[in-house]
Length: 112
Length: 144
Image 1 (cartoon, rainbow over the protein chains, first blue to last red):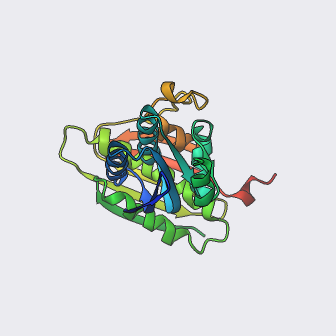
Image 2: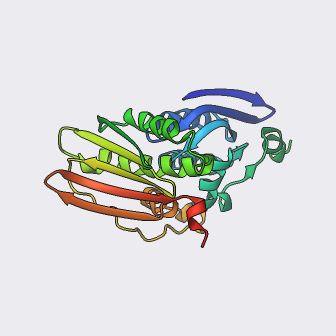
């Protein structure tokens, strides 16, 4: 799993590449937790390059979502591929987090 | 005609992407298997193997996991064999997918995904190991 982060206004865009599965979930959890811990509480998780997410990956997203909201921020999903989008819906995650078709829309949604 | 593939790997998380690659490679040229079905197959295998690694071999030396994949014209039959503690993946209560964030359980989605994505789930334990059978019907086979 390759993870890069770029700062746009007050928002961190965290782009992941590869699969978010039981093997990589801990790494993603640690990365996102470190971001939030350093004060970056508005996060866009760019999933455009993520081809596979399992239940372990969902747990990593859920943990970061809770942590960011506890800090008064939020984690929003952007550009999920169709297979990933399907499991976000199947698990009901789309009702508890905001999910945008593009990174730009997710970043803009945080406002100024 | 059936098209059969088999792979044996250690019961460790590093094997998960290897099993997924096998499914991708085996299914790529099967006309009835689109990208979404491939995702379903990979998701069910991933969740089942994660359970075997976490629970099946808990407290034991990790053994192996054998994945077989049979591509038939109307269905895909996958079997996953392990030699750990039996861990029957009986159908779980559906997680409360409408729960708010604070009430949202962090686990329980693995078995839920297996049952959501597969058409048949079977399990038997013999002296030859524990065998989970997962069947996914292909769209043309669902037409009456």
